[in-house]
Length: 200
Image 1 (tube, helix red, strand yellow):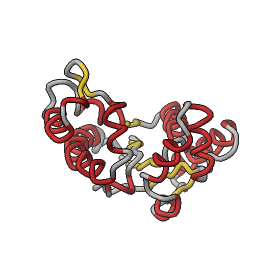
Image 2 (cartoon, helix red, strand yellow; image 1 turned 30 degrees about the vertical axis):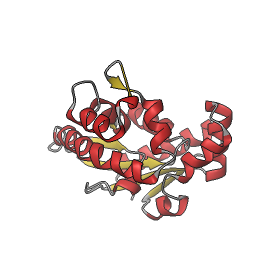
Image 3 (cartoon, helix red, strand yellow; image 1 turned 90 degrees about the vertical axis):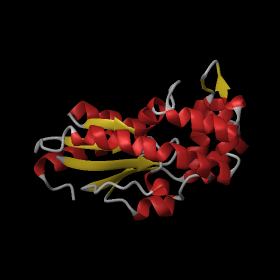
């Protein structure tokens, strides 16, 4: 098994990279999807979140993501508290899913994790792929494509690792600042190099 970490700042196009790798045959483990699973109604992590942040972050017994997001994007201490609750649960579930493929020499497992740098993800990756677009461009995408207010968009980008911090851990950088076609072409080239054993 080859284990690849995939990361990128918010609105950097990481999901596009992950989807294209999956089309080529990679097994993609999406940290955001796992994060949703560990806070489903009845999960221990959800009870701890409600205990820390109050019942206002719940709606009909489920997590109100918008309410929680408004708190943690505006308060670094609150975000760290949330991470201390969710990260261990996420890591345990991800470890189980990676282990399923551990003995398959042909498996390419991609762990798609936005907070790879911030969370110091404890896996021995064969490579780390960073989907990269400059911070200002990502702010513009949040405003133009997702309808986020500019101040909120800037705060969300600032709340994550800096471009320099993310690029410092990269084995491979996919430049997502251009067109969709240019991004896809880079991912296709990366996949060919992975298959040939020349990617890193």
